[in-house]
Length: 219
Image (cartoon, rainbow, N blue to C red; front, side, top):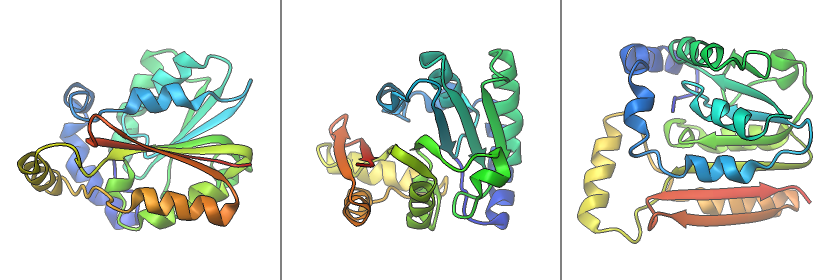
């Protein structure tokens, strides 16, 4: 989970995660819910290519590479500190040949320059949009990097709509201290984008609205 908005934001995220990255996966597994639901929904085509935007420590890419052994995976993050950990984790898992990483801005990146690819079959965000100030721009950039019949998937903090109000208030205040802002209009943004592109869209609240999942499928 890292901010991919601009170069100075990369410096901010490096400061935040310089030490947190060492315990990130141990702590985040308790509250970044829905990540495995997203991975199970990827279903890339045979020998497909999958990009994660905001890949952090590489946790999701490793899990996805193991779930889909005939696909190739790519990840970008603006934090070099997180990528140091991601590369070490990927090497430890023995997946260096199937997962490629690059430092890049989610709102302004070139798949061809980074990975020598024009597009991807699947692109996903996992708890990254809530840390990207120009998050709509990041979504649009991802949509443009999708290939024919591609799919864009997102999981992030929801609005806690079916949970006690006091829980929502406390969670949002705590998240704010980590530069995290759940996007109340995420579903509508995905619906609008799908309509504009002539694509199908699916949205779902997970864990009583604690997390939101959305998917756009090119028709």
